[in-house]
Image (cartoon, rainbow, N blue to C red; front, side, top):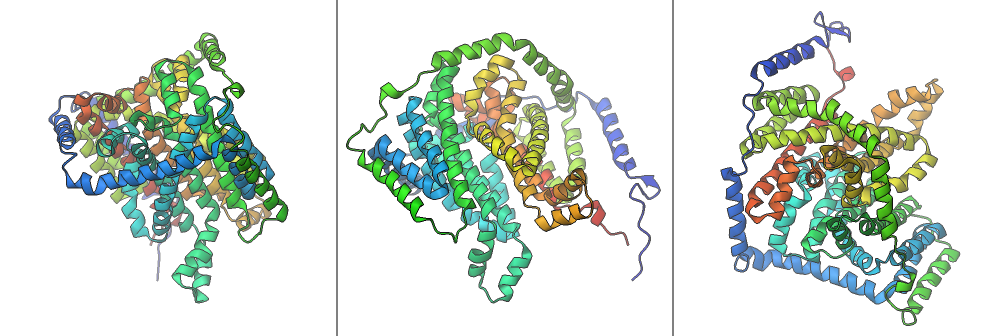
Length: 638
């Protein structure tokens, strides 16, 4: 078999490799200058498609009590979830604060020793000290139900998707819709189908927390070494034995991350779920937001973070423990003593936390916010104005003044170049659907905010993820900060952000970056740590410097995890567009909020939520398609 010489990597066909993309870019610039201001599809809030969706909602509301779908299916789901929540709530209130403290301390000791137990006891006690004992118990019950059901669904589906590429392709669009659809957009349908209260709040939380469980579990299973699987098969193991003896043990650490992210997502939903009367700490945060008092919101946000850190440390300690190692008698005795002491004190001490042991910091926190507003205004204004003038305004002007067909062609060309034909056609179909839905202009404005937020998120996430992967000490210091940033409800830091940056798009970007950076950092760190130690040792023995090791070995081999991190950064940023609508970002986020709060604009809000999903799918396909494209160095020329 003969082959011709391989062309120079810098020149193909006698022309530099950048010549063709540069030529296409020049054509697009020329087309933009010629057709600028034409075919821009302005927004019309009275569009027929908006009114049709609103009328459908009215019909469902009128027929809820006589429709078989409600009588024989949806009502049973609501009753099951409600009964499960009532069970958890009843048990927790029966234990009281002495019992919960003792039991949580005992479970934490069994999970990770006395340090984790001390953290659990201190965390549970902090709920009472902050004056939020009852709200914290309600939140703990709601999160327990949502996480339990999410993992019961997410882990089996994730394992199945990790073993089957066909299943992964089938569930990916569903996960995109679940994770990208703004929470406000499906709160109204959930309230319509499941009424309001704890069941609707738990189901809303599940919709948001199931996708990371499936995605990360599928990633963990798919990254199990094929050599180990082949060795198991060659020894005569059945598929079931291979799953439980090879796949699950080897994927254990990454699957622990899936459980961790499920808990984080569930806790981040407790505030928004309160808008449909879900109980818990969300009520305190919404009350503080309505009164514009950070002092009321912050303690509830801190309680959410403490709960997240406590549960995260317990789960990660279980994941790190050797499954074949037995607990020592001393650990079992200490855990038993904690549990017995807590249960024995139930009839002696009051079940609710004594008010005399609470700490009130409302006035101090409000004073600190006012001081920051008065003294940092000059610096924050400069940051906001610089970002707006250099990035936001030019990009928004470009996207909103360009013809819709030119933007669609540009996305098609970029997607084709980066990811191939099929992702490019999917991206084009999403844009065409957005144009047909009648929300093109607002989608372009949202794309501006998302593009800038994702860029900042990925830069910060890569830097912090690489640093954490290369330094275990730094990773240990950074982890609680990531927990706080990811679990602190966005509403909590909206008011400080508003005080510093006022009501602008930059405030929305600030909130989006804080919310989206933690999963990006975690996935980058996990991907780099998963690079085989033998490969790293071989590179070091060959004389690679730390920089060469990172750029030539670790980052290329962690490519899948990094692309998943980029995907999650996009998804998380899009999930924040509604919150951005509350603080001046406008566009699709404002449409969704308006549709949720005003019955007559329900159609516009729902369509805006669908457009947000389509925008996310478009960006997701480009990112995930890049992972499936072969590297240029691997392409053969014959």
